[in-house]
Image (cartoon, rainbow, N blue to C red):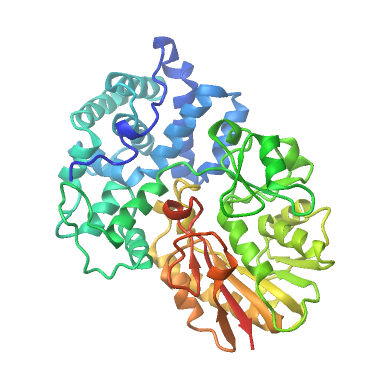
Length: 500
């Protein structure tokens, strides 16, 4: 396949090349921040999307330098697997034997060479100078030699050389080309309807129509920065008013959603933790004043689906968010419950995250309980609507968490799925007969979605598609799987169950 990756030279906005040699070394703040970010992610398990804003604030880096640092830092984290394979091909020893600090520098340089339009000589020279300043001439010479070998080919040529044969192993080829672990690409492929029998029509032109074509689109979407979405507070502000205030535009599907353009999004950060829900009040006035929150449109849609699901019997206004931290969905549920004269109970095990929920829901009729959701102490059968937004692998939010795809492994799944089943069982005990439970996860992996639901007894699935009017491509139902490449949202899964 000769078609370059969508993030390669021609399809990504140009990163800013250095204007002069004065930007080199310690005078190159953008690249220094990106390199420090890579070191923290690798060395102490930092979360890139949480650390980078702090580094930029601390060093007072703004504007184009901040944009460059973000592009290089996040991009190198996302593409780490592909970059490492290319660097390894340019070494005469295992990459694991290279000093970790130099590995970080090689990733930074290789990313600039392969996935930006920064001139090759500038990408090599700036990276080498960073190493020379911190580690001396010998280390700088080593990095210079390796990066010059990397620069001998573009990304497409390296993919042709190093990736699995696209005819014999199309999933492996796409996983490599789009910088995803193979197991994650296999999970996406299965969730998109692939059965392993589909094949690429022609490795020179790309995958044939069907699940492989969708897999390529889904993996490519994971490598693009996410759009920042806001949710207007129901009963306080309309989406149109919020769009006018922020310079965004009303979202296509959520009646409370606003999607921000790049310029406006910089005021709100990259969407925060937990699928774009920061639950807090920092940032622009609309957040501080409780008029809106940062929340991915997919999170809004699954919350609204639960809030609008038909019950057997009256809605008494007792709603529950069983896994509430850091509070994004609790805000929306609490506001919607309050419009009907009801209230929301919110359970969160971690005390610091429970405080985030309290802070986010300060003006709402929301009671926060610090407890293990599996044994919350709340009365069984007491709630009309229960949201169970379970901890998961986070495969649906890889755009938002640049390094996450390389941290999770299939070994994480058994513990997660066991916990998910236990939380689902607890939620079903707490919802009243005739009430509705929403099972939500930010992962398309079938082990975390339909396989967990297969253990359920005593409840009837509702058609969640009917609760997302106007949203296209929702599949055969009754459950809903959203996708970045289809809907512009995180890959949220939603199932609605009515208890017998």
